[in-house]
Length: 347
Image (cartoon, rainbow, N blue to C red):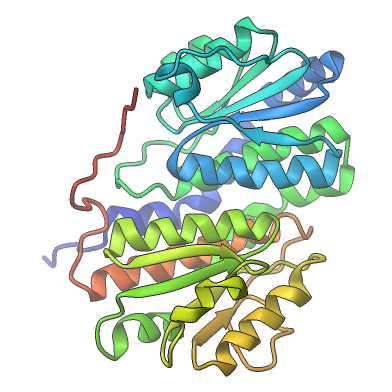
């Protein structure tokens, strides 16, 4: 009998469509009830508390809040409370704390501090019994099921969907809500996208030591997550930049063969992202993009969802499949990256 050598990370990537379907089924009552309570509070701004991949999810939600609701959202460093002991005013705000484990003391302490100063606090977590859940007004479980690989994949995606769903309900945006419910079938297609040209660019000819990921707006949050995954699963130095910033200085290190992945959605930023990807390709970069509008950069197969703001969710799913392959080609087990463990508890 042959031994199954499929990594946990790969299995969990393949579980993403089912995990999102489970969230949409089992999480419905919680999202609707929480949205109704928040609507009564009428918050004037939003706050986020998170670290790592969860902070990238919060960045996505920041853009969603500002673009959909017109409400600013600020990320507050947990050390403000846990290290410096300062209570920051939360009155009139909605505080969204994102943590797949809900265990980290600094996330919990800052969330508690915001609650004490008047914020309505929501936990987005995979553990509804965690200390973070106990510290918040409401909890939105992401229903991802056990995630055993150190690299977060399905918990990242379900965190995106849970948070976006909450904001869509706050706005009563029927079109976006329908697009969110259609995500499972789109994400299934996203798991099947072939990004092997990126694999070859990164590991096919010599050892890639550094690369860029790019985005703008909601896609920049996805770029941030992609850069982190290159570092933690492949031991490749990757830096994420807004496509509006990369030509202001970072472009200086681009040389022939330098890999670049530009994440784009069908939104108002797509033209500018495609243009920057083309500019980098003209400078010799191996530039790839999830936009069909690029003229020089290589187009990556990508899934168009039913709404522009959910397109980035499909892009990260396709990316995860590619980066797991890169790790395998480099002889690295992405399930157990060196120096890392599944739950990181910071103070």
